[in-house]
Length: 130
Length: 130
DNA sequence: TGATAATATGAGTTGAGGCTCATATGAATA
DNA sequence: TATTCATATGAGCCTCAACTCATATTATCA
Figure 1: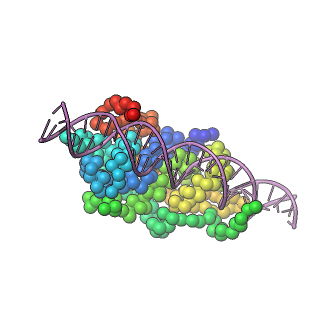
Figure 2 (figure 1 turned 135 degrees about the horizontal axis):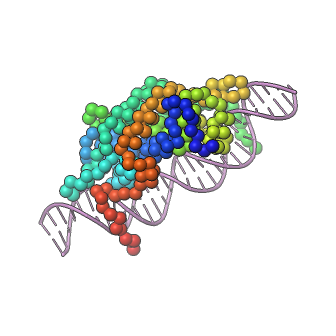
């Protein structure tokens, strides 16, 4: 019962979810997303990322490690520097697709970021409990 | 300096990130991903999701709310039931694309889920500190 | 209208993860 | 080889979010 696989075409099976979830978790952190976008299509040393983001060196190192272990970036030593690069730029295309989907289905960024609502248009009328 | 926008074609700007991040965070939780995949292309009442996932009613309600506020699902009352549906099935296509990308760039699911490594092939040789 | 079923909410607890500090490691250079 | 630069690591702190419990809300039906 815990597998929750639905044999509907277009649906994602258990193994798919197993692969997707850690990747999505890695991407679902604002500083990591920033770092990934900073890298863009170029290979850059950690120092560049630190300067571009304004984050602490230790923090950048931490996030780069998560991105690396999630399989999004690879490293390459060049002299004293370690360069970080996107494993494959096609990833940006996929993120663009998701962004476009969100733009098409969310009225505004503000609403997307900070939304409070109830299903079925019910209003918030709950009192305090004793 | 904090915007971290890189004028490289194919890169994601600050506003794109702002829209992407809450969506990715919503998807980057295993139970939520399961629930979303359980819904698939069908509209289903909460009871169905509870049964399919084996999660607590309160917990399912909590996650469905997050998915709803993130703009992934919408609700529709039918008698005593509230049906949850994917806002748009194209989302599944995008998730499939991401899954395919991961399959192509990650050697195995195990490695993706539980990876320990160091950049540039360095070995773990750090002792305890005093 | 009272009972029941379906679902949502708020408060509280707990664990995971993001951040920082101190420090280790490895490469380059004097 | 001593120093400096670039980067990584481990431990600890602290916040946030996932989960549970108790309960409220809404709809249906007897």
